Each structure stands twice: as structure tokens, then as C-alpha cells.
Image (cartoon, rainbow, N blue to C red; front, top):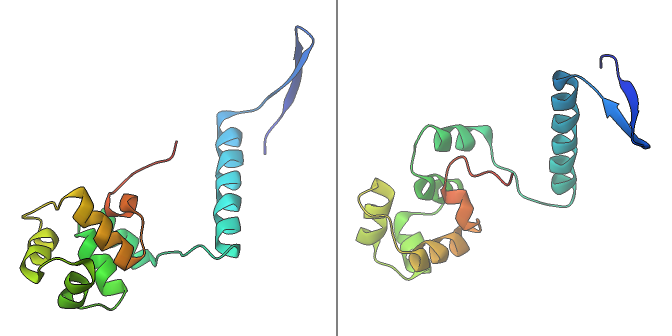
Amino acid sequence: MGDIQRLTIDGKSYVLLSEDDYEDLVDGLRAEAAMAGVRAGEETWPMELVEAKSNGENPVRLYRTYRKMTITELADAAGISQPYLSEIEAGRKTGSVDVLRRICKVLRIDLEDLFVNMKDD
């Protein structure tokens, strides 16, 4: 960490640090928050799944295969037809919000997990 300057402006104390140091600090806080989640039992995803998802592979198919389910098992559990699920996985249909929620419930994922690059901030 570089030089840190302490300033007082209008009676309030401030700290001035470089942008790189600030980004390192934020990255460390985010990493610690993620590790706290892991320690609390939150599920993490293998890098192969994350990379495949970011490379545009269908997330429903990725999570289904990660959960070791057949397309028929997922369709039955979600209460939809196997051909309809096949169309969703092939990208020919998007699926209604209700259907996607049912799929997510079976796969034990959040609806947001079906989308790439969703950020909290």
C-alpha cells in the first residue's frame, strides 16, 4: 500500500489514498465477504461452470448437468414437457418467468443465476 494522507476539512477527518490502493482495499473487502459466505455454507460454483456460462453456454443446461440431472428428470420435476425444456436449453424459447422459477427451484439456484454479468452494485 502506498502513501496514505490524513486530512482534516471543516473539522472532519478524511483519508486520501491512491486509486490503486482504494481498489485493492475494495477487492479485499469483497473477497472477505465471499469467504464469509463460503464459511457460512453458501454454495460455490466450479470455475469450468462459471467460464462456460460467461462464454455463452446455456445456463439451464450447465446447472442441470452440474446437478447430474437428465433433461427428462428436470422437466418432470419442474412440471414442464421435455421438448419445451429442450427448446429453452437450445435458446429457441426463453421460458416464462414462472417456468424459469420452477426450473431454478429444482436446480437449487437463484433466478439471477440464469443471467450473465448481473452485479449487486
